[in-house]
Image (cartoon, rainbow, N blue to C red):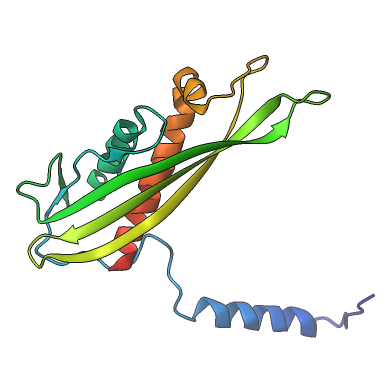
Length: 187
């Protein structure tokens, strides 16, 4: 048990140490994610053509591409083209896999009640003017947990996503944020 000096006007030594540590940590130069540098000045238009889908999950390329375009467009000072033509930089992506794994079972049965979907993709952001890759990740992954509706039985993840487009939208939105943050933080 710790005992502190309870004399008026005196801070316990432990509290003083914590305050000192907090002040030191707050001044060590860390910044919030998403607040990194910016792209080269000449980049004003970013081309984001349709991602390629090599997974077994139909339509994921369209949903992911749309969310990525929305995310880059929301960054304010950049215009997003649907194609590479006329762009100062181009973001390309290939979805290489989408795997669904059960994460929990219904009590007393062997039926899954929730799944984890892992989407893997290869992404590259290239400066067209300098013909230089500014950022790439050949094995980017995003994971989304989702619960099956009560009484549902889905062994095929594409069947589930046809039933619950919100789960696919959430996954695509998280993926888009991850890509945008990675690209803008890389600068």
